[in-house]
Length: 110
Ligand SMILES: [Zn+2]
Ligand SMILES: [Zn+2]
Picture 1: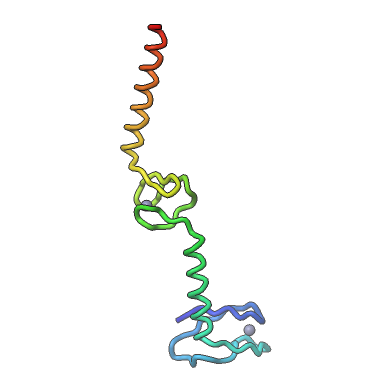
Picture 2 (picture 1 turned 90 degrees about the vertical axis):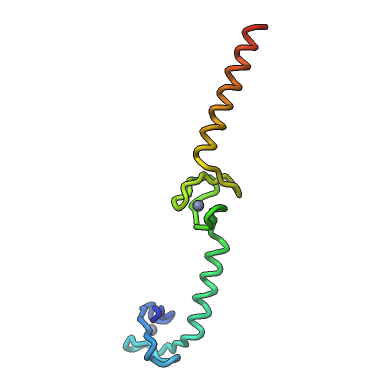
């Protein structure tokens, strides 16, 4: 079963396996002829294109919305081509805060 959109009348119809591989558009007054093999080929091309444009999570490989986001699938923070666990981000933040407070203390001493 496959959805085919007619380029002539812009109406789509469902092609089922018991229909012939080539045939006429079922819309009345439209003479466009479909070829299921051609349709399958262009569908695959579209899928490959979509896959190339999509940004994928480096950890789980699922599509994500941007290069700096939380992956909805595995819950990791994605930064560019890397991903981090939320726990690790927390540790980094704590470390940075400790470091800053250390600098402030040193600054007060001198
Ligand atoms: Zn048509
Ligand atoms: Zn993920």
